Amino acid sequence: MENSSTEILELSSLPKEKWWGDNCLYQVGGFWLLPEFVQSIDRVIKHFKPLPSDIILASFPKTGTTWLKSLLFSIVHRSSKDRLAIEHPHELVPILEVQIYTKSNEPLITTPSSTNNHFCQIFSTHIPYQLLAETLDSSECRVVYVTRNPKDTLISTWHFVNKWEKTKEESWPFEVAVDKFCNGPFPYGPYYDHVMGYKKLSMERPSKFFFVTYEELKNDTKTHVMKLAEFLGCPFEGEDVEEQVEDVVKSCSFEVLSNHEVNKSEESLIGSKFKVPYNSFFRKGAIGDHENYLCDVTIERIDALTREKFHSCGFMYGI
Image 1 (cartoon, one colour):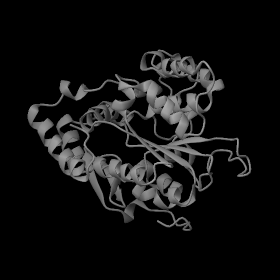
Image 2 (cartoon, helix red, strand yellow; image 1 turned 60 degrees about the vertical axis):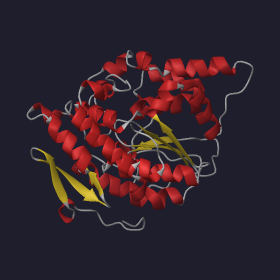
Image 3 (tube, one colour; image 1 turned 135 degrees about the vertical axis):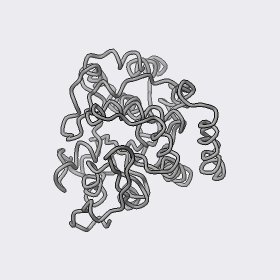
Image 4 (cartoon, helix red, strand yellow; image 1 turned 120 degrees about the horizontal axis):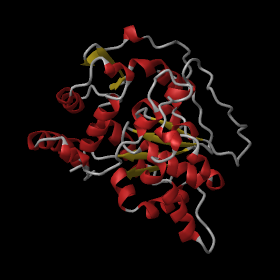
């Protein structure tokens, strides 16, 4: 998938596998993608050229993306953070493959001149680094990546998928979700490969790639908000730094965000053919929710994978 190519990637040319019922995932570059997004992901890979001033929030689905979007928007656009009360985080920080490169090679956004150094755009994507390497490596844009405990990620994804319109007729069985997560054919999976792609980059190029876990953010939000501001080149300054940071943290808390009317809405993402209501992005935001769903045998099965995929590479996380 070269950036210079204009050929449309056809589903019929790709390996596919059922992940439940009649629903299939398609494999591109070793990762399993929803058919609705295969071509838009291909467009992003081939045509998206981020500016040096751009910020990309990358993540595996259901790992804290919505919350980090709110934090990043509030950090970068502090004078406009009140927009979070009336606009959904996914509209303020749009998803490249879901809301922007949806129908053509031309993005559904107005891109500023490369000479406008004061304009900062924030985008998000679930595309693995392994597929987006050429795009990110050729740009000076900054990338923030968030990950989450694999067991909590699994549970959050299972709940999220079962809110989709297509699951009204046939829900995604929990046992099937567990098997698919462990075996790889999972939306944007394999999870472990996705995480490690960005983790390795953050270690090799920390000035460009900022890697944070959902648990770190939850346990010490203030410290990580300050670190993110420094990384993004817009540090908090003045005698009231503590108050500024506290204001951002409070306005982006789960309790505050989930109570805004826009985030309780049944409306769907603007510009997306994938109809998911705004309110489906706010469920619990808790750490350790998997303990309410997974038996000891399943926990050990996932932990064994975590040791193999993370711990063996020196990333001591996930258990």
